[in-house]
Length: 182
Image (cartoon, rainbow, N blue to C red; front, side, top):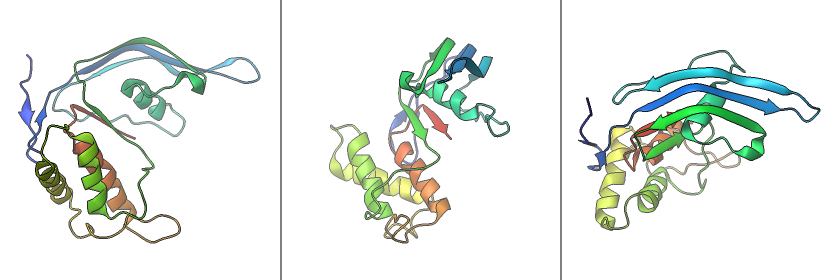
């Protein structure tokens, strides 16, 4: 049956349950010297509300291509042709990339507050956005490093694990129905 909206305990924002289905999804790459390479060959599946779905396979098997196709992140300029059926009942989708891009000079807290300011509804009060950011910070175990700069290759900042949790935190702030994590 249809799942009812749930309230996200960390943010207080309602989460609309979503289902994702795909059938005969295919992806081919046009080679510069001519010819095609098949990346996805008629893949079908579904992701149901409240469930974790993992895509497993060896390096080069097309996991990231499938994830990008499901998330709607395959650009035509990449030379990849997609075909097949894709349907989703979710509208608020988050995508956590392998390599996150953050302002290296901001602290973890400032980064999450910025994400809250930009991603939460403009009608929401600034204090409510701040409280939401602090709740996510706490839920993801980022309190100890909250006042540490994110850092980069030139300036030391948070650890790799903290960086992954920060990436997730910045996506969770808006209580997405679907989360894609590469």
